[in-house]
Structures are given as structure tokens and as C-alpha cells.
Length: 388
Ligand SMILES: Cc1cc2nc3c(=O)[nH]c(=O)nc-3n(C[C@H](O)[C@H](O)[C@H](O)COP(=O)(O)OP(=O)(O)OC[C@H]3O[C@@H](n4cnc5c(N)ncnc54)[C@H](O)[C@@H]3O)c2cc1C
Image 1 (cartoon, rainbow, N blue to C red):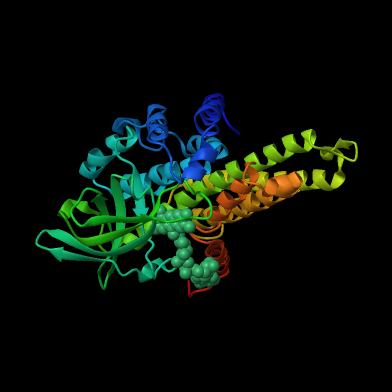
Image 2: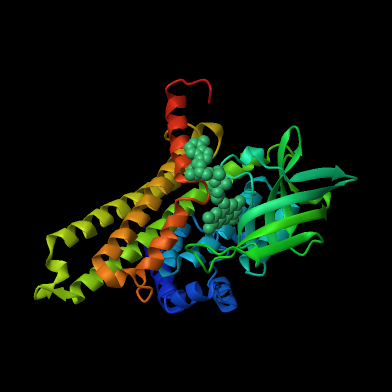
């Protein structure tokens, strides 16, 4: 249940999406790029500092307020929402939870002001679902670090000023490193040509001997995988509301079209078969949103061991929310195309883009097979499985 202030912010974000995102989203998708000005406007509105505390220049939103705004941005443009979600979500979270005062002071005010966009580089060409198998290395040299390796599918990777890079620090695990993108040896590869979210910057990054000082390491040199998974719990709740925004947009477009389009002498909205599609899509999308807010409540209870693990802990709840909401978005946008009939299959109408965008939410920040694995793992842990 949103309070008065949250309802106002929801309306503000919706107005922003209506004025600054929706008119341009088809062109951005076509051109495979977001405009510089949209990032300036996001920064002016404070949307790049939503989870950054006020003392660091951000808006210091509660998680549910952030999620409410993010859903509206996704309703406007899913690629913008993905960019905002990665910047505000896992990157800021990692700095807040494990960064030093100096690291927070160095990066968070610039991130909140939109001077620096954040990115999160975990995946590699041969390491996706199994993040523990990454081969990028961080060698301890003098009092600093030397990074070598290749990262794949880095969202915001070309525009970002700060990338959190996960690298192997030795036999004892992974480290999380704050890498400024103007560092020597940080090389951005070609933009990927993606099915959906075509305006989003998905790039490969080469780390060709990137030299970092000791203060680039976040927290403990062997705990990076744990930090990444914690940050992804928050990230997945964000992706769940991104998916909810996509699904909602699909239902609204389909309903408007169904009232306008006439066949057999009547608006097609009068046909029960199409009403059932709208109702089923609405039920699933609403379910996904409710689960995202339930996961947010689990998150707000804290991330200490007891709150994170188990089938009611944040890890399972975030996975459940992302699973449900992403499948709901794909279902709703698929049914929206069906309601549009032949026109739905044409690029001139928005629903084909929504289906392409929705598919991405089933893959990034952990595929839905991995979400099911995480959920089942926590249920079995509750039942006493000692292998987990
Ligand atoms: C648009 C986009 C943006 C992205 N942005 C980022 C980003 O900013 N930063 C980043 O680090 N990564 C990013 N990614 C990468 C994304 O997180 C990975 O693609 C994802 O985690 C899956 O890894 P993979 O592609 O290597 O697939 P794989 O791990 O190779 O999986 C292939 C298939 O096997 C299945 N599978 C794997 N293991 C299991 C298992 N144990 N049980 C059952 N099924 C299994 C998978 O579900 C999938 O169906 C992005 C990806 C996309 C598409």
C-alpha cells in the first residue's frame, strides 16, 4: 500500500515517462541507442540517485518508493529502466553495504548527480550462470591490483564511468573492484546487436592489464561472489518491477486497440476470447508486482544470514518475484500481439517491441532456470538438506 508521498512520486515518474520516454522509445529502439539528453533529464529528476542516501547527494528513497518509480520508467521505456536499475541497484548497493567511507564519498555523489553512470561486470564469455567459474584475474602487485580478462554483456558498459568488476583474487575466491572506465587498459568492445532492449548498451569489455590502487578493492578480497549475489538479490527485485512495467504497458496497448478495432460489426473488445487474454495477463502481471513488493519487505528486514536464506528469506523471495514477473511480462506482451492480430506483428505498433524487451527479463541477473534452482534450493534447505 503506497502512502501519499509515494503516490505523488508515482505520478511524477509516470508524467516523466509519458513526456520524456514514450515519444522517443520507438526511435531509440530503431537507432539502437538512447539519447544523451535522456540521461541528463533522469539526473535532473533525481532518478539516478534514488537509493543513494541524502548525505551523498541522493534522494535516499525507501526500497518500495524506488520500485514504484522504476516500474513507471519501465512502462515508459524498458531500456532506460534497465540502465537506471543497474546503476541504482547492484552498483549502489555494493558500495553502500561493503564500501569504505572514502569509496562512498568518491563515487556516490557523482553517481547521484548523473556525472557517473554505474555498471556491473560479472558475466564472461565462458561464465554466466556459474559466476564462481569466472577467469578474469586480479593480481596483487605492490600495494595495488592488476586486472586481466574479458567481461561480456555489460549493460551501461560504454557510457558508464564506474564499473564494478569481479575478478579472481587467488584460490580463495573473487574480489569486487571499482574500475574507473578511463583507466588504461579498459577497452570497450562493439555494442551487441540484441533481440530486445536494443537501445540498451550491452558491450564486451577487455581488461588489458588495468592497474588499480589498493582502494579499488571493495571489502574483503575473497568475498566478491557473496557480495555479487547479495547485490543481485536487490537487482532481481528491480528487474521484477521492470518486467511489471513492460507487462502493464502491453495490457494497456491491447485494451485500447481492442476497443478501437472492429470486426463482425463490433469492437473486438466484446469477444470473450480476448477479454480472457486481458484478464489472464492482468492477473499474472499483478501477481508479479505483488511478489516484488513482498520481496522488498524481505529485503527491508535485512540481509543478515537469517533474513537472506530460507524460503521466506530475501534470496528466495527476490528469485520468486523475478521469475513470476518476467514470465508475466512475456505472457502479457505475447497475448497483446495476439489481440492486435496482424498489426501486432508489425513494427509500426509497440507490442512486438514489448515482447522482445520482456524476453530479456527472463535472462539477465540470472536466468529463470537459475531462479527456479535458487527457490528450490531454499525450500530444500528449510527441509533439512545439508548439501546447500
Ligand atoms: C540484455 C542483457 C544484459 C545483460 N547485462 C549484464 C550485466 O550488466 N552484467 C553482467 O554481468 N551480465 C549481464 N548479462 C548476462 C546475463 O546475466 C547472463 O546472460 C545470464 O546470467 C546467463 O548466463 P549465460 O548467458 O552465460 O548462459 P549459461 O549460463 O551458459 O546458460 C545457458 C542455459 O543453460 C541454463 N542453465 C545453466 N546452468 C543451469 C543449471 N544449473 N540448471 C538449469 N539450467 C541451467 C540457463 O538457464 C540457460 O538456459 C546480460 C545479459 C543480457 C541478455
